[in-house]
Length: 223
Ligand SMILES: Cc1cc2nc3c(=O)[nH]c(=O)nc-3n(C[C@H](O)[C@H](O)[C@H](O)COP(=O)(O)OP(=O)(O)OC[C@H]3O[C@@H](n4cnc5c(N)ncnc54)[C@H](O)[C@@H]3O)c2cc1C
Image (tube, rainbow, N blue to C red; front, side, top):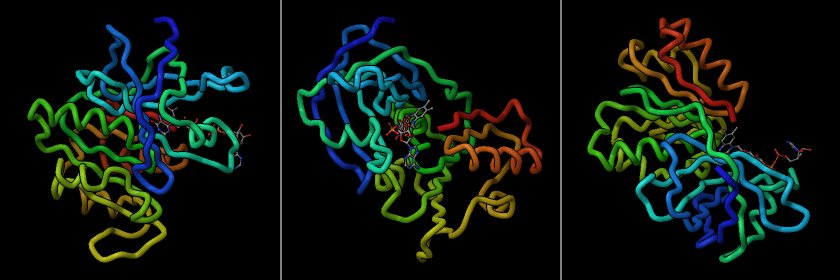
């Protein structure tokens, strides 16, 4: 696949530090829910700065959507995205990704690590196949939860939130542990999809193995 220079259709906040960016979709452009692409900003000093971001729209939509957590303190690409507006341009590179849906299971995300699951779960919903899938979403605070309302509608009680930095009634508090998983998960003989920052990934994978999950049932992507 070649590179595409594409115009931003819209750019809005979905949380205090997460942007939703939509862009025009080129004819024939295709991806599988869970896949990502490398993006650069089409401005003189930014063209070489490519960063991976995941498609969060449905493959059948006539636009492409990204849900992007911004880090102003890095002074990198996500900070620069904060200054973009409609009709500014992004450059999309190859499509890639290791997370794709293999069957019902438990999705475990940390922060922006939820993005591959947005497209996968929206796609299942569009086919009426949400089934018994569960999403465990770990964040620092309630304000950090991306698409809270949509996940509640999509998954009901199968949307489980855990907050590390805030104690709020109705939300689990702390970090994901084996004890927490034992009380939140009905079976360890199913698929587990994990996506988040490296320390979280390592810790959860170790816990799942200890709890008897088969290695081949663990599908993961490190952010
Ligand atoms: C396959 C894949 C898919 C992804 N999809 C998404 C997605 O859909 N949505 C999403 O939000 N994220 C996603 N990510 C993560 C995303 O790619 C990064 O958050 C993004 O690259 C950060 O880019 P940046 O230029 O803003 O900062 P960085 O590239 O992290 O940093 C720019 C510079 O800032 C400096 N820096 C680094 N860390 C710090 C720090 N803590 N404090 C100060 N300075 C620092 C370094 O010098 C670095 O060179 C994905 C990652 C992968 C691997």
